[in-house]
Image 1 (spheres, rainbow, N blue to C red):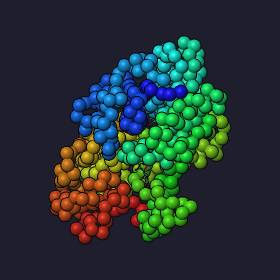
Image 2: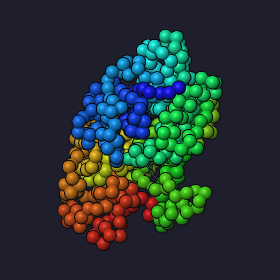
Image 3: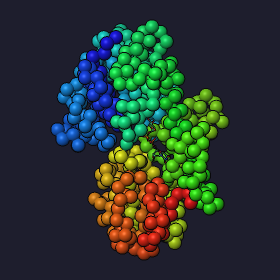
Image 4: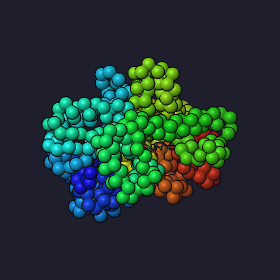
Length: 461
Ligand code: UDX
Ligand code: UDX
């Protein structure tokens, strides 16, 4: 099957960049990205491409090349579904906040709504591609909805999990380690898989395109994220031991990372991992294991989350205890709010939880993040239940120098490169003394800061 029209439901961090690259690499395919959120679509259509709603290095260039040529952003979901032969579902699947599986299972209501809408609108055969990370066996549920509520047309469901990491999305999409496509092992399933393989093979070596059954594909995504998150929790667990023993976690990470069996990536000790995927995907894994009565399996993976929560809390506690056991009415500057550098995404960012802990100790927080707006900071705090009184203690600033002015301490929450380039002597001069730096990313040159006069505390040494 030769695909000439694609639709993607969900213009978020996954749908937007992925479709922009497909459109760039396949100029003969019309790619329409739709979203219920009108404001988001309007932002994607902003004539000034630097104002698109998602910040990713290199993304605005790709969008400016393809937009209006064969890449379109629209709120006409029905129209886009109707004309497409292939529909990607890329809507969010947050952790359930109610009912059975609350706090653990994925909320699939948006996925179900999409499936029902596709079924209602489709007048000819369609290939439906799961792009959102989903619990294992979701494809089956989508299939059941499509087949039972549709107009008698044929649907093929593919699982095509996205492995891009935010902040490097464009690079990851252009040169993926692998593309994974799961589908039915029937002739029609294999034809659908081929149709998607043909799209990716426009720019990805066929040897790097893996095809599997649907369930292997779904489970592989959860497993990849669980393994990556586990590495971060593992090194973070060692960081606490390092602080007690006099070992230095950066040295330990370097030493173990040079073992080619272990490898050097994802060994950076930090204030804790964040992002929309790690926690959610592990919770999904835990929930599935529990559902099948696999208690040990569930407990094993849940420990990765427990460790991560501990690391965030431990960082906040260390700030309080170092500042002579009280931060009440002290000004603490947060450098960074995003969950990692080079993104404006703040979902599950460690900064939110550390701020919440410090605010409950009545600290005042001054936030500077190069890409995060002040409204986002406040809505993140509201989302996790910080009271209005607490939120009033948190203010955003337009520059790090302002945020640090007369602060008692600085906490580095995101590893933005620009923080390394600052005039730290000037920052020191304008702070309260003694001036502390709590480096939650082990980003800064501790020796240099100590020479300037700071009391410098890193993670794991
Ligand atoms: C991320 C992950 O990458 C994904 O795998 C995970 O399952 C959820 O979080 P992401 O693209 O980052 O996905 O989500 P988000 O930026 O929230 O984008 C989802 C978009 O879907 C939003 O713009 C939302 O408005 C839209 N949406 C949601 C719809 O268009 N229709 C719906 O029914 C629900
Ligand atoms: C992750 C997966 O990497 C990606 O393949 C998947 O598609 C979505 O989930 P993402 O969440 O965007 O991507 O970012 P990632 O680079 O994996 O970082 C996740 C979190 O772990 C961040 O908060 C990051 O700061 C933290 N981290 C990562 C560490 O603390 N230490 C490390 O060594 C690596």
